[in-house]
Image (cartoon, rainbow, N blue to C red; front, side):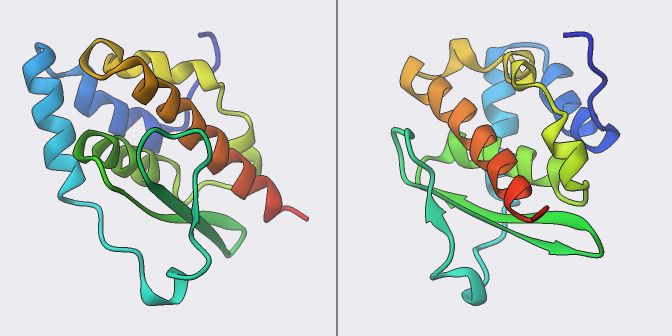
Length: 139
């Protein structure tokens, strides 16, 4: 991956890359899951299920001062942890910055061996949905 990721996303990914082993990565994800706030009531009806996920993942976005902010939730703790990292790392970016993030950065999370293959696909689907929501706010 030659593209440079936004600093906010790099700092979130560092939480996982700094973990010395699989167990610590999982613990980090569980801790991050607990930091994800509930979806605000104003988004309860608009937050849509992310297609292609093996668990229920709801996601929505809004734009403020030209920057995208995400809200979301997931039923599974590990996926919720990844969602928290992505929301923290990608909220506050412009739609153009989000569109320029290459999807292969997901492989740098290092959680593929820690989750079932179907859940790895969920991570890509969540990221794609986040990019799509950002694109919707550029029109």
